[in-house]
Image (cartoon, rainbow, N blue to C red):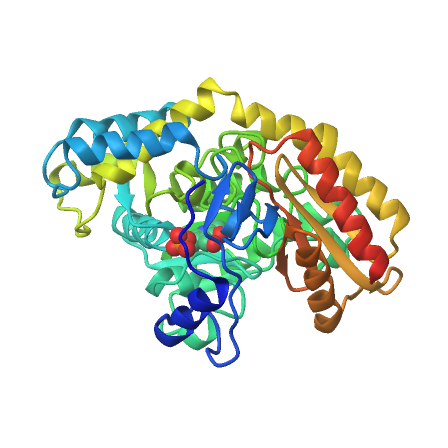
Amino acid sequence: PASSNHSNEETIALDRAHVFHSWSAQGALKPLVLEGGLGSTVWDDEGNEYLDFSSQLVNINIGHQHPAVIAGIKAQADLMATIAPAHAINIRGEAARKITDHAPEGMNKVFFTNGGADANENAIRMARLHTGRDKVLSRYRSYHGNTGSAIAATGDWRRIPNEYSRAHVHVFGPYLYRSEFWADSPEQESDRALHHLERTIQAEGSESIAAILLETIPGTAGVLMPPPGYMAGVRALADKYGILIILDEVMCGFGRTGNWFAFDAFDIKPDLIAFAKGVNSGYVPVGGVIISDEIAATFDERVFPGGLTYSGHPLAAASIVASITAMEEEGIVENAAMIGRDHIAPGLAALAAKHSSIGEIRGSGVFWAMELVADRDTREPLSAANMGKLKGALVKRGLLPFTADNRIHVVPPAVVTPAEVERAMAIYDEALSEL
Ligand code: PLP
């Protein structure tokens, strides 16, 4: 591959002089340089190579530099690189059609945004306008993005310094390993979480709640798999109280779990779906909302008061069409399911049998978390200092990890091979042994 012809030192110096980074105090940053990639591997220009088991921000589902996606973007750039959203352009309609091909019956329209946060932002706006209600119920232990309503709906520390709205109410969701409900079985956890949700709806006033917004599987919060009955129970409560369901599939959608959508594995049909990341693996920034026919009809006569200069950008649309086509033709979603079932699940189980620092493993497809503990009995989380050491040990051995709190998320691209998973498991094993 071509080289950028800059030393890492030069690139870091340029970055530190002029680039202001996300979610960080800027002073002590020393970002890792990456200049190229292919499939599940990334590299710098000084010969350092890494197995990308982070998929960057869990968004490169199709792997780095997929040739069909690059070609699709180039072809559209030659035809028409940009156009205002009010016009019709074939590639945009085709992108929306390919997305809705994988959505449930009765969800036929797509509003395109620039990413995941504004997908949630606009889904919330649609739910409020459709219901005439204003509150949004979401969960602690969630992330929905960094814009007004999306960050207020978020259930982690990032909400606190950004919270100006009181229309967002949070509940605890099911998480048996650290149950808020004193539960000792998945069924009990599910029943009690649903009871807590219903009591919150009643206490807030059900007629004031427009939507329940949930990551189908909370991602950054720890790949928290819904227990049996929970998702169906949420749908039943939403129907009982006339509340809409927005599923945030930004991280878990488009193949990540081994299904096209994560909710395909559960008994729930949403009213609105927020997507981004895996829809085109981030080759061009894009996200959007898949809208039920009923909600779309609300805006047949009434103006939808929302829009973006780059809504349905042709280069984004081309990358979506190429990406979904390649995923269909190359069986990439099926590969994610197979890798999860036959390689990651047994690989992590073997690591957990050997290392007492692994408290729990959970996930599906290429969407897994290892929850690390200082003590298996008390479940005390592994310290930040030890997590830092572990991260260093993994990078030193050529694996780019995704870490959050006391967890390593095992989230390679959906195109990852069994041999690459085997190599990653050996690296996790060595790093955990060193710890
Ligand atoms: N929703 C979920 C579940 C996410 O994981 C993220 C990003 O990590 C977002 C929304 C926000 O997406 P974006 O960063 O593209 O705005």
